Amino acid sequence: MKKKYSLTLLTLVYSGLSYGQGTLPANDCNKDVEDSRGTMIPWEKGARETGIYRNLFLEAGYSQADIDAKLAKAYYDVFEGPKRVYFEVGDSMAYVSDLKNHDARTEGLSYGMMVAVQLNKKEVFDRLWRWTKEYMQHQGGARDAYFAWSVDPKTGKHNSEGSASDGELYFITDLLFASNRWGNETGINYYAEARRILDAMWSKDGTEGIMNVINVEHKQINFVPDKFGYDFTDPSYHLPAFFEIWAEYAEDGHEQFYRDCADTARVFLHKACDPVTGLNVDLTEFSGAPKTAWRRPSAFRYDSWRVPMNIAMDYSWYAKDKEWQQDYAVRFQNFLFCRGIDTFEDQFNQDGTLPDYILSAGGYQKLRHSLGLVSTSAAASLMGTQAKSWKFVDALWNARLEPYEDEYFDPYYDGLLYLFSIMHLSGNYRIISPVIN
View 1 (tube, helix red, strand yellow):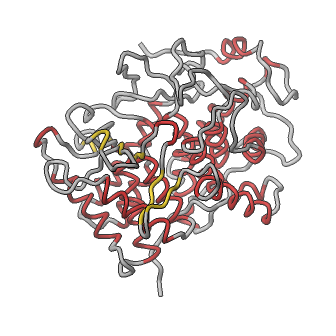
View 2 (view 1 turned 120 degrees about the vertical axis):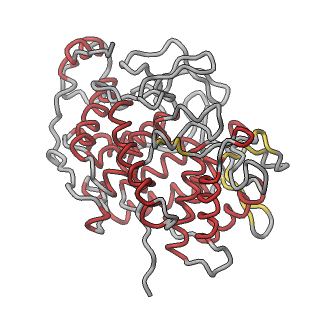
């Protein structure tokens, strides 16, 4: 039976909390706030149609010089500074490391490549791709052209031969963007590399248990492309905007299928996100219903933080589902605002209660006010229709990539989500179309 929630009951649950803003009594935390910048007005058309990307930091009152400096500092911290997660190898390669887990992941390499192509850093992109191809990509066999999701960066040994489907999703999109930005005659044929992954994906027929990255029947990305993970999914892997990119630039004969996948992803997110809190769990069936695995219940956890940013990207680029997406942003930001704009936790049950089981990270098992979620909740302001959304933009602006009070520090996941969100809110995360000479 589908659960029904009461806003009145939820606000009563929250009534004992600190709300940070101090402008509303606790039981009115779902109401909008007063702000000199007024109610946020969302854009009604996507950048694919208009060619314009929103700079919410500028609209919020920050100067362009300060915005440019903040983006440059975020990039420096993640890629170049003393606590960086980007490491060069020899004259031509580099990797991104999840320092707390002592490995290199397809998630991190593909995120690093996306940052590089967005910010026009070709050498960084090429180094990352060469390392990925050399140490992660399978050459031959049933897994041909797929990637080992976790690798020891010191030895190149695969910690796991299997793939995480979001890695392939990002790599293909990264390479298509690189082809559009730099062409294919500067040392790497980016388009051919993207097509190799795509063509291999379509060739997977279950041999040795290896499957397509997309569940073809459901037209949804799966958790892992093998028989174990083919029939369920992770909501944070659902990026309808990326499937739109494939439909436009892959040119592999599956254009309508990819458009269908984009539409299906949007419908899936309606089902996966709670109708009151907006929260999604980290593992679900294709129906959006929570899935339990590894003897722990699904909940809103680390993977889940990416969902508001992914939805905001789709809104910013295409705005094909704008009414639901605007409503989602209200629900999601209202929920976090009620937990306290400066204090909201980073793991929840889908109904907004705190989970009994806390998923650990980096040897710490505790709830905290995490920079990663501060960042992606601010990205949701691209869909904002309330003055309250400015508060999330300000919270990201004032946030810092630095150790927490207990010395826990994650420049990898927190850092990359922080950098991505600054790119989104400054108008620097874009559809990269072919350069016309």
